[in-house]
Image (cartoon, rainbow, N blue to C red; front, side, top):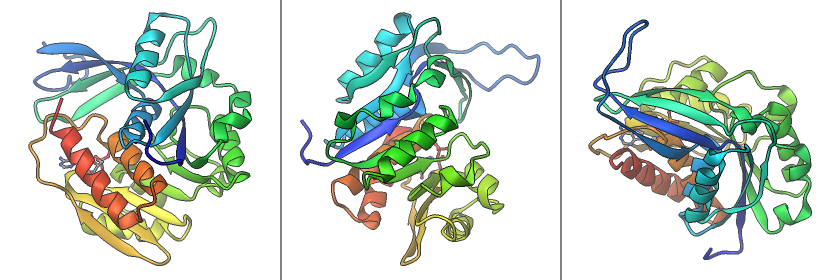
Length: 288
Ligand code: ADP
C-alpha cells in the first residue's frame, strides 16, 4: 500500500518486450546466434509506472492495450508492480504495442518498437476526474502521440499537477507542449538533440543541463554510468554514477525516472531524490 497521499499519474506506452541476449548486435545483413530470449514487461510508460509504485507511491497508469493475449501479460505486470490499471483501455482491431531488444555482451542494447495500441489512447481517458484525485505529478514520454501528451499536460497543469517529461525517444515537439513541462529528463542523445551539447561525461551533462534550464524550470540530464546532472534557476549540481557491474542497461532510464518522480512526490528535494534515483538505476543495470 502507498505510504503517502500523493499520487503520480503516468500516461504512456506499454510494450510486450522480446528481450534477446547475443554476443554482439547484428551488422546489416548479418545473422547472429543469440544465447537466450525471454518476454519482458516493458514500454517506457509501464516501466516508469512500476518504478514509481515500487517507492510506495500511489501510481495510476493511463494507456491502451490491444485485443490479444499480450495485453493480459502487460496488465498483470502492472498489477504485480502495484500500479492502478483502471485507466488502461482496450483498443479493438489493433495489436498490443511490442518491442524487440537485442542486448550484447557489454550490456548495451538496440531495440525496435511497434507502437500498436499505444497510439489509441483516447484523450477522453485524461478527462476522467477520479484520475487526478490527489495527483501531484504527471510523467510523460514520447512513445505515444504528441496530441495525447498535450491533452495530458494541459489537464495536469489546470489542476496544479507538476508535469515531468522524459523526452525519449527524441522527436520534434511543439513549443506549446514544451511550454507545459516543469521537469525535463533527457539522456545524452536527447540532450544533444535539444540543445546541441555533445554529452559524453558529467561535465558536458552539466553544460547541457544548464543550457536547457534556460527553457525548463528543472532539468535532469542522465549520462549513463557517469551519473546525472541537474540544473534549475536556483541550483546546479551533479551526482556521480555508482560503480557497478553492468548486466544490462535496458530500462535504466525508466527506473531512474520512476524513482525520481516518486521521491519528489513523497516530498524529497531534488538532491535527495536524484541520489536515490541514481542508486536505484545502478542497481537496475546490475541485475536481471
Ligand atoms: P537511458 O537508459 O534513458 O539511456 P542513461 O543511460 O543515461 O539513460 O541511464 C540512466 C541512469 O541509469 C543514469 O543516470 C545512472 O543513474 C544509471 N546508469 C546507467 N548506466 C549505468 C552504469 N553503467 N552504471 C551505473 N549506473 C548507470
